Amino acid sequence: MSEAPHTVKSYEEELKNLNSNIIKMGGFCEEALGKAIQAITTRNSDHAESVIKDDEKIDKFETLIEQQVVNLIALRQPMAIDLRETVTALKISSDLERIGDLAKNISKRTLLLNENLPKNLVDALVRVSSNVQKQLKSILDAYLDRSSSMAMNVWESDEKIDDLTNLCMQEVIKYLKENEKNLDDGTHLLFVTKNIERIGDHTTNVAEQVYYLVTGEYLEGDRPKGTEPIVTGEK
Amino acid sequence: MRKNGVNMIKISAKNVDVFYGKKQALFNINLDIEENQVTALIGPSGCGKSTFLRCLNRMNDVIDICKVQGEIVINDFNINDKGCDVVRLREKIGMVFQKPNPFPKTLYENISYGPTIHGMAQSKQEMDEIVETSLKKAALWEEVKDRLHEPGTGLSGGQQQRLCIARAISVQPEVILMDEPCSALDPIATAQIEELIDELKKEHTIIIVTHSMAQAARVSQRTGFFHLGELIEHGSTDKIFKNPDNTKTQDYITGRFG
Ligand SMILES: Nc1ncnc2c1ncn2[C@@H]1O[C@H](COP(=O)(O)OP(=O)(O)O)[C@@H](O)[C@H]1O
Ligand SMILES: [Mg+2]
Picture 1: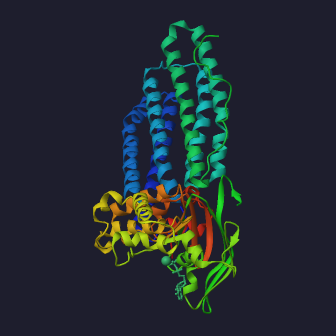
Picture 2: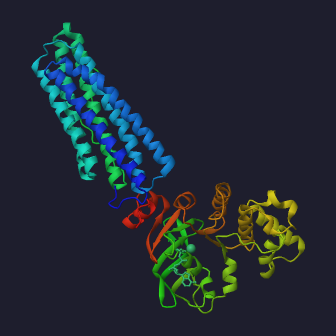
Picture 3: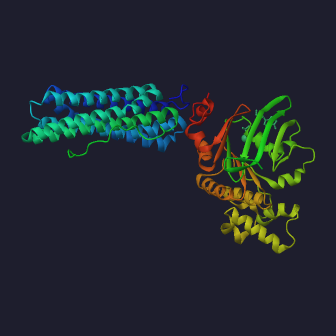
């Protein structure tokens, strides 16, 4: 937001409120992802169940933010920085909502997983997820601080996540081949990995929005890409 | 004529200073106006928008204490030169004011007045044609064709303003200056004028002063922001309203002023 306050105080309040709802919603997403991963590493199904239950909160924020944005556009006709605040809030909230959904999906699958997963698989998964969690935290900080350089950093590190995802998937595929009896576990783990990667993609979308919000310009060029993703287990 | 990107430059203001007596109202204004585009001038009251607009057809000449310095180059000719024919200049650069000001005469006479002075019609038939095309271009013909000989003052506000626009275009000006042309009109009449402006820019270059930011955003392709007699920022309307360079511009258009 610009340093000077709006002449119309209620308008100022509405924009601040929109901003703080994004921050809150982002906080819930961070928490959901954190718990979803913890549920896998510590085999704690309470965590998984609370992620599934709390997704409703995240969905409600999306609806609320959408209503606030529609009201701002209809009643205030925001311009310049205010316009960018309003439009990016709408887009960011829809990415955050997807992040919530994906965390919920991870948790649902976690509840179906075998109690004793091989350590190397869990470790590979944690390597991807801890990076994604870091990205999500950084981009929410970047939004709060209106920092285009932080947003750019997040955007550029998506590549690393793609690479770690592929490594993790290779491990899971190897496991699948060696343990035909555990087909269910292997399949769930593939989806969990893919979901974590997609959370990373949504985080990158948010990074693009934060960059636009701050600079008024679009991040140019193709998104950084890691190695081609593995879609199936076939060679 | 020079080019600026894709468009030709129709008017170039160079180092323009304006004084009312000892008080300086405009400070070193440099602005290129693109041909066949709508340029909006915005800024708080008293920042000098109207003063600048009046520089473009030497309307400031009629204010005794007003002194204009610098160059206004139109079609490669500096209109502030001694040799400028002001009557011809005002034929080429028409003007529409804030309050619709039809002459207290018939609709027909309101429009035929200009072409008569400038000797543009050789016969009654030719004049009829000028009146008809001008009214058509001003999107008023259908509403008034049966009462051309009734007084112009009997029309609604929006119709009167379109009559004034028809009067302005009757002498085929190259440029049309509009000073808050919709501030006395309701939203429907305003929309009709805005639609008309969009149509008129095909044949004319338009400069509009408006205190409505939303109107500037709707009708113009270029926008200039004035503040305390200075041109703070100018550029594509798109850029000014989405991502202006100057904090003052941003504060003004987002309603954070003063
Ligand atoms: N005829 C005049 N005599 C003296 N001062 C004037 C006259 N017209 C305008 N001014 C002064 O010049 C400044 C710019 O006025 P103006 O061009 O009308 O601003 P705007 O159109 O942006 O509201 C103001 O300070 C105003 O008081
Ligand atoms: Mg004025």
